[in-house]
Each structure stands twice: as C-alpha cells, then as structure tokens.
Length: 198
Image (cartoon, rainbow, N blue to C red; front, side, top):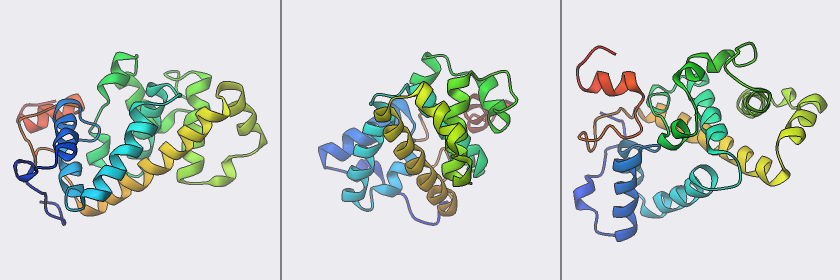
C-alpha cells in the first residue's frame, strides 16, 4: 500500500470529482490510484486535473510529443508507476513501445525524429541540467515549436516531473484502486496485474 491512503472512489459525491475518477478508470494517464490519493484534498485534485487537461490532454502541442516527454521523465526518475502507463491517444497518434524502449537513449536512437529529439533534450534540461538549454538547443526548439507550444510543453514537463517524484515517494502502485480497469497501462504492466507473463 501507498504511504498515503487511497480514498474509496465509491464514497465521492462531488460530481466533478466523480467525473475525474471516471476519466481515470476509462483512459488512465493519470490512473485511478494517483487520483484516489489526490481525493484527500478536493481543491488540489481539481487544480491538478485542470492543469493536466490544459497541459497534457488539450493544448497546442502534439499530444504524442508530450507523452514522449512524460515517459522520458518517468524512466529517468525511475518512477515505475508512471513509466507503467501509456496514453491511449498518443498510441493512436503513432507513439510506439520501441520508442519507450529507447527513450533514455533518444539522442542516438533511430526511433525519434529531430522534433522529438529537440523536445526530449529540453525535457532532459528541465529535469536534470538547465545548462543543456544552450543557444543550439534553443535554435532547435524554435525551429520545431512556436512559443505558445514551448510554454505549454515546458510547463507540462515541469508538472509531470514534480508529480512523478511525488508519486514515487508516496509508493503508489497499479491495481490498488479500481483494479478492474487496465486503461492506460503499458502492456507488460497490464499482463503483470493479470498474473500473466509479459
């Protein structure tokens, strides 16, 4: 169990919170477990959800680019919970498990195009080394993204970095809330929860 208890979703009566939990059940990213922890503070949950919708699900930057940045952060901070999730929409837009397998080696992998590499380099700079954001990287970023896209992408990377570190320290695990749903799970994580080999 996580170090902060999960709120039982069946006890929630606020229609906005019920809808947020239903989206977690149906689509994942975020999955029900992380949302059930946020339910302890409805104002925080609503604020997080509003930011997540604006920065990740909606917005002006390709969802698949944001998903790659989310997965880079998850893998680089070694958050098994977040790394075990996949955005259904990103997969519909062409993100692949081969990219996830190579995400930490994106600079040398043939799985990524120049635009994806520029975004992932920026994710690395935000997460680990602001010095990587030199004039050359900024030229690449401005070649591939508008300033509105850069604002959205940068805020999304920062939000997901903080959330993933928080969830890792709390010890959130898949299948501990609304265990009947596999929405947004990586194939190997879904197989693990079913007790099958990946």
